[in-house]
Image 1 (cartoon, rainbow, N blue to C red):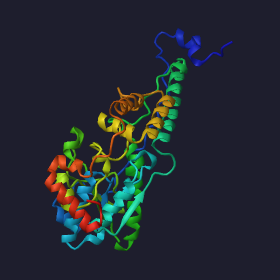
Image 2 (tube, rainbow, N blue to C red):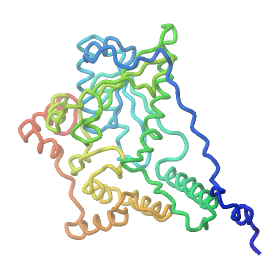
Image 3 (cartoon, rainbow, N blue to C red):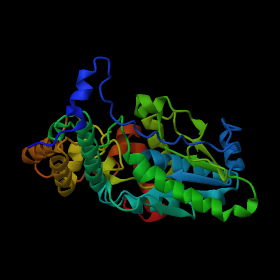
Length: 363
């Protein structure tokens, strides 16, 4: 016999004006307060003045073309000011879900640019795929509990998607933003003798041309979420207004090596399979790293949802396999293919020749 619950008591049902039993009130998340010392707006938006005023200039490098171009641009300005010693390059290591060699490339780019301090941060514990499964377990438990509170069968509870999405980019604070802020804490401790809040200028390679959401971002703003009584963090997006062509021209000028995934045809670089990536990037990833694609497909089964809304990893793998069957295994494109598409073969040839002369890289 099924045990009666509060929802079955006749007293509740026989009182005409009694409201329906309400679910327990959810505990409100404590509102985060910002220290009174943190300003609302930056004191300046002039690049050289921001570099002069900063105690640390922290450049976030994914190893991709945008952060690479930004690195080159910011380092050039800091060197001209005689302040290269305050520049730190940080790479958030994403583990198995990022393109092979990305961490090593980011470090090489920093060293060749003349930056002496390169830091690697990484989220502790589970990686992205493991976090998706953990998140699914929590969302499922919550949905079932809420169903019980409504007097419904928990087995029929609808579980929200556990994968990151454009509207729920929880992967960014988990894998990048949080670990980078631990670096800020260490940098602040190194300058504790200043006796005032440490000024950090964080440089991020986001561009308006990437998306409507990024187009709405300010080029310079106070990062009040990362600031506190010990540090004031100013976010600077140095290449926010740059076009793809300008990015590639800066890479050519800098002579720094870029990731070969771009020559394979990728538009973005970070996670091999990013929910914000275009379909061709995802198919390219499945062709280049099929074993990782298979792990994503297995995770889809576990959490009962497609990796990307309207596009499953199973379908991405199917498209990759169809291309392999039709074209055969793709031969690696010549180095410089991506750059040549944006700035021409002549300038690309000069870039490759200068790399060979300066760094001993194959032309």
